Image 1 (cartoon, rainbow, N blue to C red):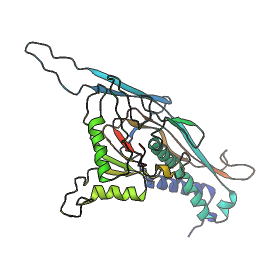
Image 2: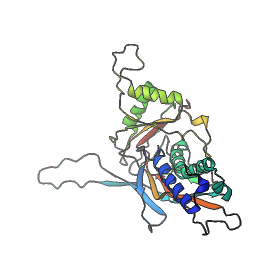
Image 3: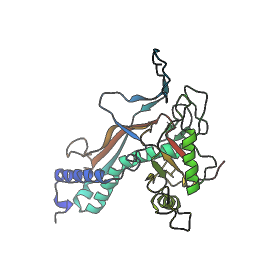
Image 4: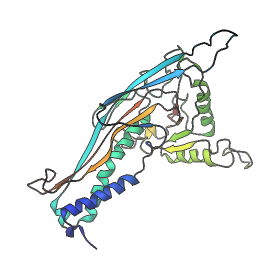
Length: 336
């Protein structure tokens, strides 16, 4: 078997680049692939900002009397939200000694870790839109204040969201913030029925097909029991039908119950909610997917005095959420 100490530096670069690609392709992208966010691939030379908007038409047609013109439909422009791109990167220095002294296990582990950092950060940023969804902003791990309001200037999860064409307000945070159960899920579905409005203030039919949760074991097990059991989990009689069977796609967001630095945050462990993948107005704009840039021996990626080689991983994206009528939540902590 060939060891790293027997491979030339250029061959080593090529070998590890292949491992980079394999590792990137195998990584889970829970929030990105959940249906909660709509992905917009940005083209080069199109700037670093883009405006995303809502547009609502009327729900119903009008009567037409004989000989009269049909009434023109009304279009209500909703709210806008500006997305701004941010670029992310990490470097790793691989020493001459590590390359030449058969330390392949340590080297591959470090390279595996760095290649995961870009998609991991994107997952953290996406999930933190829900983590900090009851606030207007948060300070991320880089010390930058991140605006997480939606188009009406309020937090994503709020009890008084406003509408552009009506004085009516709506809520998308469940009263009492109960933990996930059969009863609280039914209450959440009632919230969908009564509090999902368009910008004219009319009730909209917005099917919510996603049940999103944290990785809290009790919440996770409850979600799967509710969604997968053959019979009603609250009944002793196994002949009682489970009306929730296969109703939702369960999305477990394992970085949701964390603080800004990604450390566990027990105060958010019971967060859960439902959402509509079809009507989502949450956008992930990707300018540059995770990109592993290998060093070239003899170039400026090699430090002259030490012969260290620098590996670089980069990525660039932006996130914004325009409206709030497509998603509902409970913090699960019983707060009024």
